[in-house]
Image (cartoon, rainbow, N blue to C red):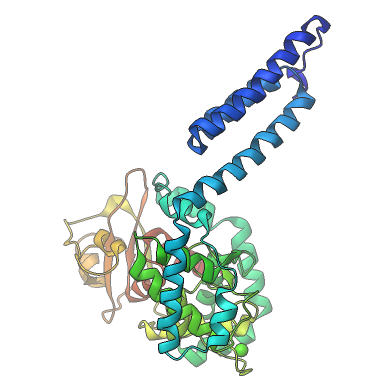
Length: 382
Ligand SMILES: [Ca+2]
């Protein structure tokens, strides 16, 4: 910053004029062109900052606050308020007919307005595709491995107890927990009802999110969580294990027996809910998730799977380990009870992954190969 400060006094007038021009420019650009210009605007503001560093800070704050106000206004205008209220009224009537109490609905929908931030997230273009190595470096970091080990060591008795009760491995409960919300620390702060009503009202995936909204109302009606604590990710993933409401209804567990399935604040309920989910998706304890293998040893053209979650499209046909070994894949083991698929190697990746039934259970939790590999690797490292 300091290097940009100009000290030539003769430039004062020019600075003032430039500053006014900068401010005017910022406002005009914001009002005329809108938020898509924020990057270009940011660049210009930095140039303005060349004139006077102190002013730069103020200017940036000013422009930033303008931007947020403007974004909110533009976003709100994109959502038809009348149509949103009609949608909420419709959902409310249907929820009543499904047996949800009107008191619950009063609390759920009090003052509800569409959330433009949620629509902005929903319209976001996909980020650039990371290689497995890039993804895993970030997600299975040294710090996360260390914390996972610490949590596992500290709670081993309870994790083993839950693992035994559901026939799953305790390390995986910690791995999911660590990767979903950084061990419960980042659950998201979006109002679940507001987010789901916004997305349910929006045309793009209305049926999916409306179904989730009914499930959310059901959860509130059963009293598992207060409306104030009923928060999560922008698209409705909730609590320390980021269950969608319908997943909660199907799989959440009240492990400590206090009458509430509290995946927001009660770790026993969080871990048991993950365990129950995995058990119901065919988990085999101590069968592992699969193998990281050297990509150079592979492989015959695999048959892609067409159905199921999208990640499965990158899987080969499933074979038992001896069959893979016969094809030259260097992998230890002789388990003939388990079938493994090979994940198609992406450009730039040194390793491939041979994945078994438990891996497919992880995919049912979150259908992304890199995510599932990160869960498996993290669990292995605990
Ligand atoms: Ca409980």
